[in-house]
Amino acid sequence: MNAAKKSSPVGEAADHLAKKLTALLDGKENDAGAPTLNSAHNDSIDLYKEVAKSDAPPTLAQNNAANPLEPELAGTLKTWVQIKAKDLPALNLQLPIAGLPQIRLDLPPIEQETGESEE
Image 1 (cartoon, rainbow, N blue to C red):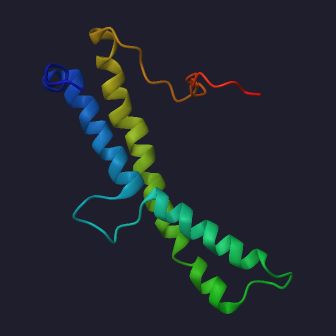
Image 2 (image 1 turned 90 degrees about the vertical axis):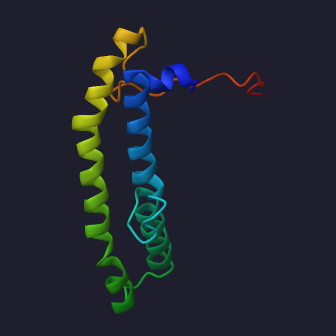
């Protein structure tokens, strides 16, 4: 984003939203131990793979490993809900003023053509 757009209200709102999303996905620079969506996802996948190795019920250690996942995921999902309810609508109010389309989470992403053949 160029300096002119970044200093505009739309640019500032977009930058604010991008920082919040980056913190939610990957964490803040100063808070390495805080749960993120990526860490919750990775921890869940790792545990799922471990449990799936056996036909037996999960072990006590596996159950204990699952216990912190629920509050970790709940906290990150709460942040995501707040972003969708507050930050995204605030940005979407400003985008049409700048001649830009609103961000619509109800639509599938538009895939960009890579120029490669699918064959």
